[in-house]
Structure formats: structure tokens, C-alpha cells
Image 1 (cartoon, one colour):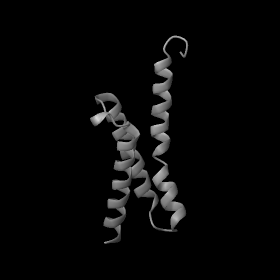
Image 2 (tube, rainbow, N blue to C red):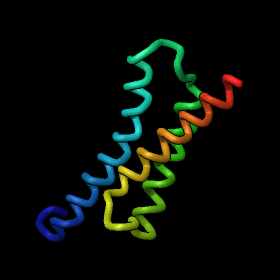
Image 3 (cartoon, rainbow, N blue to C red):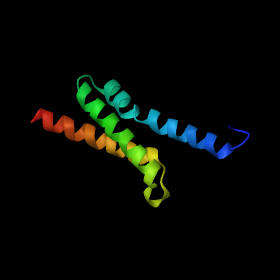
Length: 88
């Protein structure tokens, strides 16, 4: 793959990085303070983040920004909204 299409290898690595980046909010919030978020909020955020990454990958990323960034923003928003709605 790397000999015939080097750009495809880079694309695969960037896509994998976007998926791994979805674990970051759960890791930071989980280590920061105990019981600040629950597992359902994290799961919903990660699924939403990956769906946004897939959407941006297929249909193009607005403004040329990396797809993982949009997924990360969506992930954090879903976790925040879920947690705030559950508390009230």
C-alpha cells in the first residue's frame, strides 16, 4: 500500500488518530474528578464523535479543518449536555 499509494497510508493514520482522539474527553474528565460523568454520557459522546468524523470524511470537512477536531467538539458537547440534563 505504501509503495503504490503513499497518500492512502497517511489518510488511514489520520482517520485512526481521529478515532483515538474520541477517548480524550472521557480520559480527562474521568481523571479530573470522580463521578463527574457517567458511562452512558461517555458512550454517547464517543459514538457521536465518530459519526461526525465519518460524516466529515465522506462529505468533506468544512473550512479544511481536520475531521477529528469536529468529532472532538461534538463529543464534548454531547457529554456536557447529557451530564447537565441528567443532573436536573
